[in-house]
Length: 439
Figure 1 (tube, rainbow, N blue to C red):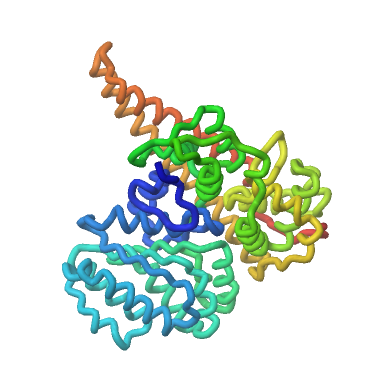
Figure 2 (tube, one colour; figure 1 turned 45 degrees about the horizontal axis):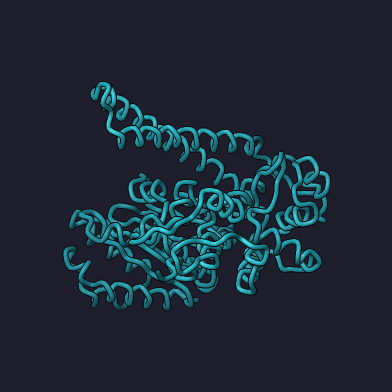
């Protein structure tokens, strides 16, 4: 049996695990412009490719994936869009699009044409933008086109855009401070891409969607989950190391948990995406392992409300986790990287996104996360109610699959309720004042 764990490349179809609730939200939410935020190797490209895969035969959506990496101007982005359409031109024939019609138009004009043609045909273009950070360079070169692009992306009516990037894209708002309208990212739905659900993480470890599942003892499953904290890339990374030709995973050894040079590079990039205040929090975690909120506030001088906002962001983006009444590194690999680089951490570059923009986006993220969770809670409660009615009609002979569906819905309700309780602990005053000192 060959090693089934895929490390480094994007996946879709049966190789894509979890994210079902998020995918359903991205496809059916009333918001037509969404920004999916995630660190490197969290699965952003795979999510976009899975959305494309799931909508290939859809009667509403016309999916268009566009990798924006390597572009630095709107002219290059416009050309790249034409290439993306050309590669899947057959998808656009039902809406009557001729590729030549896109020539000579700027990027907002191209999107306007796609939107209009799709709307007339009763369809909607599903624009999937990957590596959207390139909009920063393009916006610096041509602020006027950036403003036009924002208006077109949030127009709806024939166009739904889901763009994925790291949090560095927040810099767009700093470029727009002198706009008479609101900053670029205001009006976008914000969704954080973080770890898999426990069920999806276990399925990925066991490769239950593959042709031949992997044999993994329950204690080892829990150990892998604990060391990776359900990070999809780290699960694949560790399991690929542990896989044996007989179709099972061997026990973990200490050397398996040491970050390779490649992992260390990813962690350093992620660390450089943080503000100076957020880096100060992580340096305390690196020094003491687990740090409570009081100790963090005392050591960094960050006020209580902004500290909670920073902790929310660091948790959602996979830097931190709650542990033993305090805060610790998100996973074992990142923890070991932090400890190994304690001397270098204070000298590393920090994010060029302003503190004002960072705090604004954290507030927006908290608000939208609460709304999203409330929506999902109501969906699961309605689902459970319908399942309970089905069970009542079965009498004493309730089918086992129905019982499992009920148990799953109950578990989801409990999980979402716990997430709402955690979020309530993060929120409070939105007066995110500046901090006094850094350590």
